[in-house]
Length: 308
Image (cartoon, rainbow, N blue to C red; front, side, top):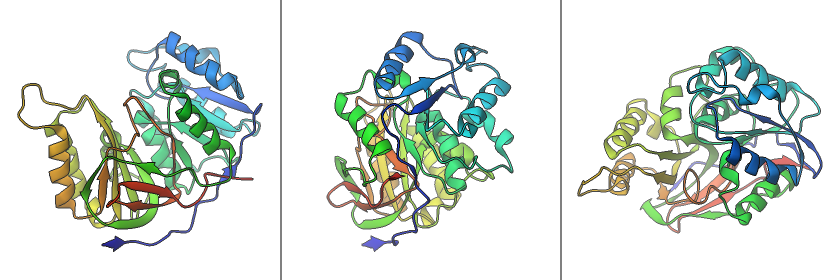
């Protein structure tokens, strides 16, 4: 079946160029310094990254208190000379910043935020306000990924053309759908449903990925989506990596559970896209219109994330 239609695109940000100033922030958890500097070196070979000394702060499981992390986020988004914002790590903590964003729109300067996992909370807030952002590697992950992923990230930020299509591995529910790509981490998204920070889902293609959630927890969160009426509003489902989500000793897999849940949702769904916490984490622009062909497990981007 075919569902949905091409939405009007959000306003794209201006394309980056090599040598541009970019900000590095830590809006969630603290991070390992070795992997941070390895990722920073890759970004510094292309752009001029800037960060404050406070980025290395720690408060329990957070990269400093909420005031520090919010001030850093707001400063990076507000600085007119900063052309993009890269997140150091996900983990946990971005959701805690949302109340400080209530009633405010992102600053007028158009720039792309790059991150995933817990950064999903900020992506959703940006899509709520009609902004494109990039679901992509954080700095502490970047050095573990292949050069092709890094090149795709740079092209997404710099080239005013739709990114190359991505291919999944399995069709759970056949069909085709078009809509705006929204979503990210399943755990974080379920915490934002029903709050003022959730973007409209009508006609959207919903991207979901996660790590370390056993099958019954995936079932519980998916059921939350169903009870909230999410599957009645979206046009299709794109499932990325669900890593370390197995129940030890079980005679069933997380993939089997997800397949049954997806089939019950009734919307076109393909799984196994290289997005998330796995060996690959291909960057994808959120907020842009896409076409999902669940029969051949392909995701096509209909517009670019940036403009010339």
